[in-house]
Length: 217
Picture 1 (spheres, rainbow, N blue to C red):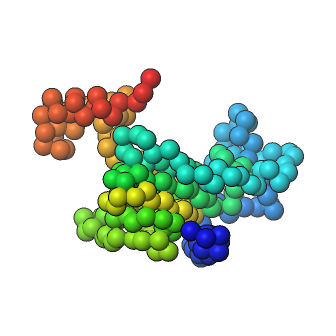
Picture 2: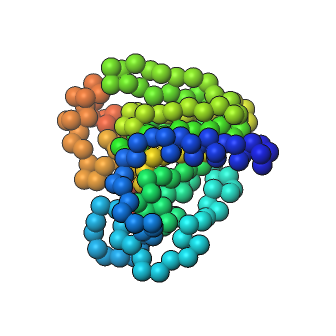
């Protein structure tokens, strides 16, 4: 993708963020650069006394992420934890890279709507409404697709070449809950009898899935 196309993509994502109603609280001053080392607990982060341009910039999205994992995908976030100047501004970006066959598994963002712009490759994407309707599409370079706030969604690279997108969020820290790992990898664990009844499977199957999704120690 050319520099011009990338700039066009970022402009489109910026327009989306500006047009969306911010889910984060409105700011009450020009800037409130996050003090990530503060022990004070607030809704967001306390403001640092001193800041500079480094707090408002990052090259974290410049390079493709390593996709040599079990899912064949990697999400690289440029949120308030990576760019402290985003604190109180209600926006963030991520880069998602997919190996051939890679999957960003079904998940939700409880605090933000997401909009992706396809940089390269081809993806099958979709979200599921609260009435269990699947809204899905195959997207190619230059396409955008929106995942409404809180709805379960996914992206799958069914192509033979790598794929990548830039994702925009109307939150400085959108949060992510992966459905499978949330239910089968929680600590303390979700009781087996809850999962067996919910998914109509036996205890052995639950134990097997939990062993695969258990957090690494």
